[in-house]
Amino acid sequence: MTKKELIEIVAEGTDLPKTKAAEAVNTLITAIENALLAGDDVVLAGFGTFKVKERAERKGVNPQTKESVVIPATKVPTFKPGKALKEKIAQ
Image (cartoon, rainbow, N blue to C red):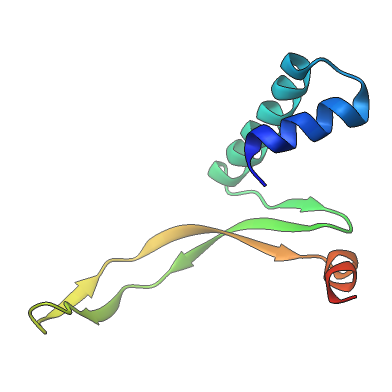
Protein backbone atom coordinates (compact mmCIF):
# COMPACT_ATOMS: atom_id res chain seq x y z
CA MET A 1 0.00 0.00 0.00
CA THR A 2 1.27 3.43 -0.89
CA LYS A 3 0.70 6.71 0.93
CA LYS A 4 -1.72 7.74 -1.82
CA GLU A 5 -3.75 4.56 -1.32
CA LEU A 6 -3.78 5.11 2.44
CA ILE A 7 -5.10 8.64 1.96
CA GLU A 8 -7.89 7.30 -0.28
CA ILE A 9 -8.87 4.72 2.36
CA VAL A 10 -8.93 7.39 5.08
CA ALA A 11 -11.02 9.67 2.87
CA GLU A 12 -13.55 6.91 2.16
CA GLY A 13 -13.67 5.72 5.77
CA THR A 14 -14.22 9.18 7.25
CA ASP A 15 -16.22 10.88 4.48
CA LEU A 16 -13.53 13.56 4.33
CA PRO A 17 -12.35 15.14 1.09
CA LYS A 18 -9.02 13.71 -0.07
CA THR A 19 -7.25 16.98 0.75
CA LYS A 20 -8.38 16.79 4.40
CA ALA A 21 -7.55 13.08 4.57
CA ALA A 22 -4.08 13.86 3.17
CA GLU A 23 -3.61 16.52 5.87
CA ALA A 24 -4.62 14.01 8.54
CA VAL A 25 -2.24 11.31 7.27
CA ASN A 26 0.62 13.79 6.88
CA THR A 27 -0.02 15.19 10.37
CA LEU A 28 0.09 11.68 11.84
CA ILE A 29 3.35 10.87 10.06
CA THR A 30 4.89 14.18 11.17
CA ALA A 31 3.81 13.59 14.78
CA ILE A 32 5.43 10.14 14.78
CA GLU A 33 8.63 11.53 13.21
CA ASN A 34 8.82 14.39 15.73
CA ALA A 35 8.31 12.05 18.68
CA LEU A 36 11.07 9.72 17.44
CA LEU A 37 13.42 12.67 16.85
CA ALA A 38 12.76 13.79 20.45
CA GLY A 39 13.73 10.31 21.68
CA ASP A 40 10.18 9.28 22.60
CA ASP A 41 8.49 5.99 21.78
CA VAL A 42 5.16 6.03 19.94
CA VAL A 43 2.82 3.36 21.33
CA LEU A 44 -0.39 2.64 19.42
CA ALA A 45 -2.27 0.16 21.63
CA GLY A 46 -3.19 -2.99 19.75
CA PHE A 47 -1.12 -1.97 16.73
CA GLY A 48 2.50 -1.61 17.81
CA THR A 49 5.36 0.56 18.97
CA PHE A 50 7.70 2.81 17.01
CA LYS A 51 11.04 3.54 18.66
CA VAL A 52 14.60 4.53 17.87
CA LYS A 53 17.36 2.00 18.50
CA GLU A 54 21.08 2.58 18.44
CA ARG A 55 23.25 0.29 16.37
CA ALA A 56 26.76 -0.13 17.68
CA GLU A 57 29.84 0.37 15.54
CA ARG A 58 30.79 -2.88 13.82
CA LYS A 59 33.25 -4.35 11.38
CA GLY A 60 32.27 -5.19 7.84
CA VAL A 61 33.92 -6.27 4.61
CA ASN A 62 33.91 -4.38 1.31
CA PRO A 63 32.71 -7.10 -1.10
CA GLN A 64 34.64 -5.64 -4.06
CA THR A 65 38.04 -5.32 -2.41
CA LYS A 66 37.60 -7.79 0.48
CA GLU A 67 39.03 -5.01 2.63
CA SER A 68 37.88 -4.74 6.26
CA VAL A 69 35.91 -1.57 6.99
CA VAL A 70 34.38 -0.06 10.11
CA ILE A 71 30.65 0.62 9.90
CA PRO A 72 29.92 3.57 12.20
CA ALA A 73 27.32 3.55 14.97
CA THR A 74 23.93 4.89 13.95
CA LYS A 75 20.36 5.34 15.10
CA VAL A 76 17.56 3.54 13.26
CA PRO A 77 13.78 3.69 13.57
CA THR A 78 12.12 0.38 14.41
CA PHE A 79 8.59 -0.96 14.65
CA LYS A 80 7.48 -3.76 16.94
CA PRO A 81 3.97 -5.05 16.19
CA GLY A 82 1.53 -5.35 19.08
CA LYS A 83 -0.07 -8.58 20.20
CA ALA A 84 -3.43 -7.85 18.50
CA LEU A 85 -1.75 -7.11 15.15
CA LYS A 86 0.37 -10.26 15.38
CA GLU A 87 -2.73 -12.34 16.08
CA LYS A 88 -4.65 -10.84 13.13
CA ILE A 89 -1.80 -11.53 10.73
CA ALA A 90 -1.25 -15.07 12.03
CA GLN A 91 -4.83 -16.09 11.19
